Length: 321
Image (cartoon, rainbow, N blue to C red; front, side, top):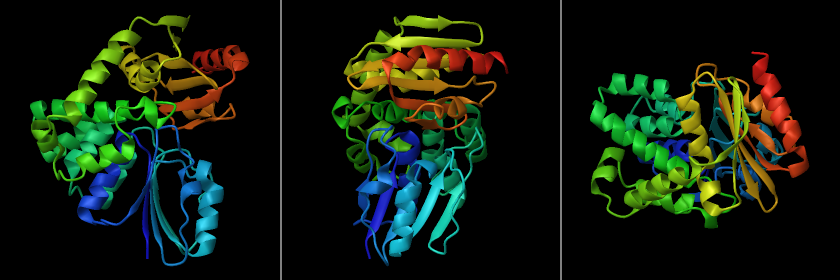
């Protein structure tokens, strides 16, 4: 029997898997992950009868064909996610914990599955996914101090920041490497206090890239919708998601999109208004490489000649709500 751990390389995916593997170790598991937008991960899994596949924080709808192949081969699949799923297959080899509500993330779903056993990792993952209210509810339940909550927020944000890029080469750490560095710590606060290499590098990179992004030009600037453009550079790709989160938190009634130039098209990150976390996935799924969840979504390769169409679609959607 071979165990496969398939997970999004962002904070939510990594923190969800850490919780599971602290509770149920699989030291020989085959890890399958990548940059945040590398979501068609099940195609890379060659599981067969008797193998166990754990899938975290990637859309079932985007991996439907590969999932069906694995189930037909006899693999057992446990699927935990919060992205748009479409129709969930019924199969004796498939167990799911899928919740697409806008204030839920995969780290929270795993936390529920484990009855809060590693709740600080759930809080870090939830904060990395920019769900501050949900994270605060978890922190209140666990009686986490404001100082510790602030540390978990910084860590979750930095883990999430590390996942953005067109390729792994854009990142400070490959997501699998970062996961392995974090896994030995049952409490992420111990990692923040003890680590003298990984965390400082992530934090400094985050602060430097964000400072550059704050000077970006606006392609659209309306009370209900704003679009910001970033140049074709590794730092732009790294910061696009967390910059979108910062903009969303600063103007919670406004929807935001960050458009980053790339070699193979435009990379788009969409954030629904914090006070109305809905619609981001609906907008992005109208474009060929788009997907995500209600509060946050993206388009992996938007042809430049479709930029005007995207901006108009984005502005019209939130003008009517």
